[in-house]
Length: 144
Image (cartoon, rainbow, N blue to C red; front, side, top):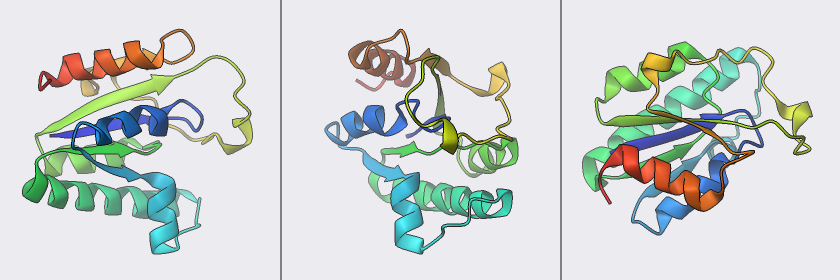
């Protein structure tokens, strides 16, 4: 299984994904991948390259280790479709939030909102606790 926790910077992606490491998931984080591959290109092309690389790695890890959790912005529909075409074992968790978390300068201006049919759950992390959010993710995965 591949769980993708995505949304704007500051929405809680990494915080939630780190919980699944305790559940024997490999965790791939967007910032970590950028550090490893020296990709500091935040243009649309640079983001697409980073996201498709993450998707390829996740599918490979899933083939040898069963469970992967991704915490990346995934702002573009074409990148979400790319991963969905690579694997049918993907669960999409879209995070939103309403309050100022000091990350507004990092928001992706051209973020393409997902179609409701393409995601498994939306979590508003402004009014849902970490514990409640993790329970919602576990519920859609039906593996715990």
